[in-house]
Image (spheres, rainbow, N blue to C red):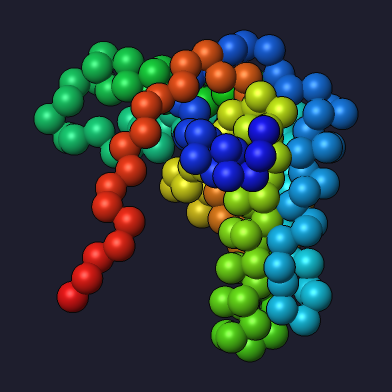
Length: 185
């Protein structure tokens, strides 16, 4: 696959086959992330592969967040069903990666390092797609919680979780929904 083909064909994947991505494939995919551009060569990106226990712990938290977000008029039984659906959704992701960024220095450096990590994330998504692996970049509220950073062994004062990459072999590839590229004013 050429780079242009990867860019044009890559899609966010929501439905995955159940098998996890093998460690050696993940390592190959993540190796492309370190080639992202980064000012001052800070290499601020961090990729953390969630183990099964960590995934279960976060799925429980995901369940609670889904229930807490449910409108007050919803009864307890349906609130529990919504929570269970959230838990099941999180657990259906074969491999979950947390992507974080070291946030040090002044505001300008933190912005540059955030941008560099996002560039690394795009490299990773394109490399994954080239190997037949799909991803969904999620910024669910669970990624913003201090407890999540603690669980992952990240420094809550220094490490910022940009999101989770739900990762696996696509069960379904959505159609493109891109809009007009250039807007003139």
